[in-house]
Every structure is written in C-alpha cells, then in structure tokens.
Length: 180
Ligand code: IMP
Ligand code: MG
Image (spheres, rainbow, N blue to C red):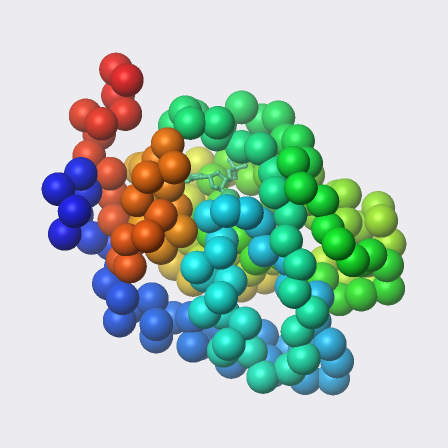
C-alpha cells in the first residue's frame, strides 16, 4: 500500500469483480441498441476503460472535461465545461460514466445540460458513491460501491493530480490535506 494511504477500501480483485457485474447489468438494460458512453475526465478514465470492455452492446465513446476541485479537497458547487463532446447527444441513449459522486453538483449540471441538448435518455453509472455528502439531487442508475465521506484516491481518483495510477482504491491520510 502507498504510504500516503490510510487503508485500502477496494482491491484490484474487488474492482475487477464489481466492474464485470456493472457491465452485465448495463448490457442487459441496453440490449436493444447502441449506447453513448460519456467519460468525465480525468477521474473516470480507468473505470471507463474497464467498463466499456465489460459491455456487450455497441458503444460510442466520448469524453467531457469539467472543473471541479481545482487542487482543493472541498467542492465549490460551480461547474464549468473545460472540454466539450465531439459528437452530438441528440436522439442518443447517453450513459454518463463517473468515478465518484460527492456533492452531486457536477452530475446535476451534466444531466441537465445533456437533457437540454436533446439526448433521448440520460443515465448515470458511477463507480463510487459518497452518498452521505450529497447536496444536489441526482439519480444514479448504476453504482459500484458506496464509500464513506473521506478523501478517496486511486483507480483514477486523485488528490492534487497524484495517486490516479494506484491500481486499488484507498483512503488518503487526513494529515496530507488538513491544514494544507
Ligand atoms: P461533486 O460535484 O461534488 O459530486 O464532485 C464530483 C467530482 O469531484 C468527482 O467526479 C471527482 O472528480 C471529485 N471528487 C469528489 N470526491 C472525491 C474524492 O474523495 N477523491 C477524489 N476526487 C473526488
Ligand atoms: Mg470526476
């Protein structure tokens, strides 16, 4: 385990197993058509790559970059698009792929935006759900695991752009971001 982690929440094996289950669920629900999977940069990239390989229906892939924490460990409630989609969502069944839902502000904004742009349907899959930190109302169709209200790193998730490449999911030691 990395020395900046307090503990490991989910091992590589836990992750592999849960992603396979999510892929099966999504495959079943979208069996009649094509899916427009939108990965939210950069946190969801590792989950996205694993998930699309576990989905057995045709997947159109695209990415969106939004501002969130800006190197702080607290959320601002403000969302800005830094990188927009290459394709139109109009008439498409959209699946937003997130790493973690915390306050829910990011997702609330994204769902509203994509619905306004004419998506046929908008659903959300998030690997992690920090449900106790929720402030905005969002509907999550698929979730990997619920996590405690702590700072989570690894498997794409960062603190100040570090730890994204850890193959497991852990809790960051508090002393690394408190009083920082
Ligand atoms: P929300 O808008 O507060 O729901 O925040 C969503 C985004 O904040 C996620 O997509 C993550 O990129 C980031 N985030 C929230 N909690 C954590 C965490 O514990 N570790 C790393 N990133 C996080
Ligand atoms: Mg994110």
